[in-house]
Amino acid sequence: MYKVEITGVDTSKLEALSFEETNKLIKEAHDGSIDARDKIIKGNLKLILSVIKRFSYKKENNDDLFQVGTIGLMKAIDNFDLSHNVKFSTYAVPMIIGEIRRYIRDSGSIRVSRSYKDLAYKSLNFKESYFQENGREPKIEEIASSLGVEGIDVILALESIQDTVSMSTPIYDNGSDVIELSDQLGYDEKLLDRIVEKKMLRQAYNRLDERQKTIIYKRYFLDETQMEIASDLDISQAQVSRLEKSALKEMYDYMKRE
Image (cartoon, rainbow, N blue to C red; front, side, top):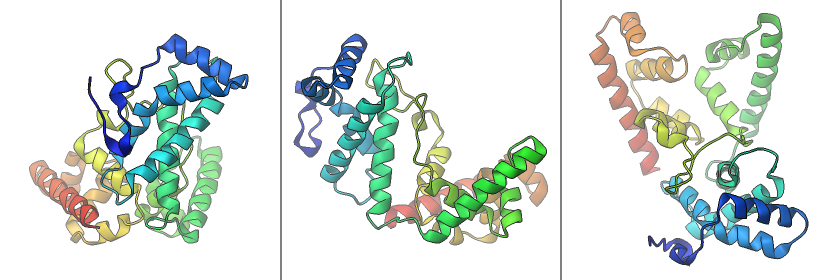
């Protein structure tokens, strides 16, 4: 059996819980059984270890992340609603990720500034009023224009306060349970997800030349196709594709160095 050695936990000796066993133990845990709670935790440690791998590019201690992830798992146990006909792991993994993201953010390296929090709430207020008046969600550039900021700052600000998770957010795959999220995204989208989660997005973005900035902004913040961008810039779609890939690589390399 496959063995994970991270944080000193030998997962090859951990017994996997079935859907029925998990739900039975969760009900007992909700009724106050500490033993049932412990069994659920031990039966789901692989979830925590799987999540930690997603954060391997960050300079964080894996043991610390493991402890924080365990807190997320315990919160998932406490808050899981058995009336929803979904697997516990589908709910637990996003909870674990959210807890780790908060820890990393609050630990200092990517602490959210007050200015970003203020911008986030202004953006949310604008989105609400805009929807009431127009019957649709505003685009990023519409929010940015209204608030007198750049779209990239709106994206980062909103991302900085998004710690809630959904029962339907799929992320993990252990061979039987398939939980899909970023693993179903393309390389570029996964990269942008990682970059947006970090406060250093602006530094990475600002290192690009003007044409690269334009392409990245249009592709990922305005949601334009490569063909639309090619038409706007009067270049070929192939050129847009090459410039986009080179820009993403530059941003990715910069984030790795930092």
